[in-house]
Amino acid sequence: MKKSLRFISVLLILTMIVSSLTACSKDKKETKDDVAVSAGQNGESAASDTKEPIQYSVLTVFDETASADYDNPNDVVSPAIKEKFGISVSDVTFNGGMTPIERINMLVASDTVPDVVIVDNPNIAAFYETGAFADLSEYKDLMKNTDKYISDIGWNRLSVDGKLVAIPGDMSGGEIDLENPQLADVVNDPYYSRPGNWALLVNESILKQAGYTVKTVSELQSELDANSRKITDEDIQITPSIKTVADLETLLTKVKELNLKVDGKPVIPLSLPDWGGFHMSVLSAPTGGWYCNPDTMEVSGFLFNPGMKEFYKTWKNWFDKDLIDKDYIIHKGEQYQEKVASGRVAVVFPGGIDLATVRASLKEQGSDLKVIPWPETSANSYVDASFPCGFKNIMINKNCKDIPRLLEYFDWFQTEEAKDLMSWGPESAGLWEIKDGVKVFKDTEFANDVISNAKTADGRGAEYYGLVGKDYAPHAKATLCAPAILFNEKSVDRSYPLKMDAYTSSYAYVSTEMLNRDGTVLPSAGEKSNTASGYYWSVIKTTKIASLLSTKSDEEFNKVWQEILDDFKANGDYDAATEEMRAVFKISLGK
Image 1 (tube, rainbow, N blue to C red):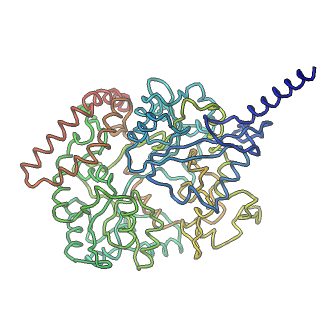
Image 2: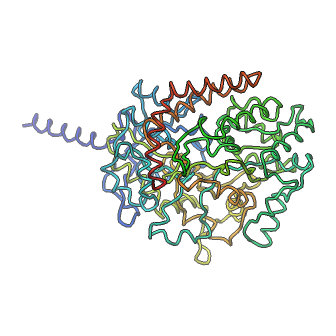
């Protein structure tokens, strides 16, 4: 009898241990004091009776290395979310100099694919083809709060062979579903702006030294502080005007002829991240990606697009004249950041750098970055594709043990409860108070700087506490490894008088209409087109463009150009990808 009781006791103990060790995937270390929460009615959260912790590992293809936000001792958001849900992030893997395809293939080969992968839209199909990721189709109904913002087209973009294989990670490059009656008021919301695109920036000090006049960012800010209003063409105008590609070349040439130096190093007329050439190509081509002529229905992509060879001839001419940073092809993010922040770059492509830090550095030098319109082109485009599901998206390892609970957790990030927590921090952090019935930050200086997307004298901004900033950008480990806010009706600036930021307002004014929404420009949308896209980014961009820029004559340029096209066709599955995209364009253009 005693043996039976002892055996039953052991079984009970083992059962309790197993139930307390539920995790997203194998080999996770957990704590017992985490509290699990599941989604409740109306999109808000409801406490669960269980205390089963989940830790999930993450791969993000968008960062080479970890930023300070991933290990921020002042982060008040991540601990609050962990306390509420019993869900937290364990290890985070970064690209570390590899392409997304190289990194995922390495992880698949070693059977170390993290639980959650934050992947760019064009690589979704290629990642799913590795066999490592779950079909999420049966769980879509768990994403009710997210579904409110995503159109049917957006969900389709996250599908492969009719299977839902990813969920939206953010809406960068895309638009929420404004045809949804639930979002009818959003379009008229003064705090909502349509997503924009890339725009060129110019160092104001260098611009003036080159003989140009402009309304500076600080001058415009003074006007907006005195009278909040919409941005106009006059606010962004540069004299002499930069309306054509030739005008832009004139500016770059004038900068070069000044022979300016900073700390003994020459000022660079134009610099950009290593991937920036893809976007700069719209100076002559309709897009760097997939394009369909709406009249002929001829489909092309990448270097095969009309105007692309013309662009690279111009680009090589600028490269040979030292109008372009010769190191841009091998740029690391920190190298580009240092050049721009030191004042050594005249015209800046804004991707891949911390612009807030850059602008703070330039302001100390008596300058700033002024946004300028892209030159008009023969392609009459200079746009990128809109992503109706966003550019960053989330895939889940098929071996995750509790996918439904994880998806409910991710869906919670689109609730008002979540947005309030991410924007203001938990009450326990003591950052805010209710005054005259309105939530405000206790520290007025801090509030003003958060609204202005700036930092206090002692270096505190939204990111200091891991809060979501004015641009919806996440700054806490928990929010960096979960879906970003798609629309923030709890944003901090709603508690204060509307204040326009001259820089961000100008950038939005210039770039918003540069995003292609007419269906003639699309991202990759299938296995073949993603294979071609992956080949472009992993091979053409990293090695072939360098060989093109190193040619010594027009004859050699033409020869290498044709070799690159032939290689793309032979090894990038380009022809099959074009056929695949032709079917997609027929849908987008209603043909």
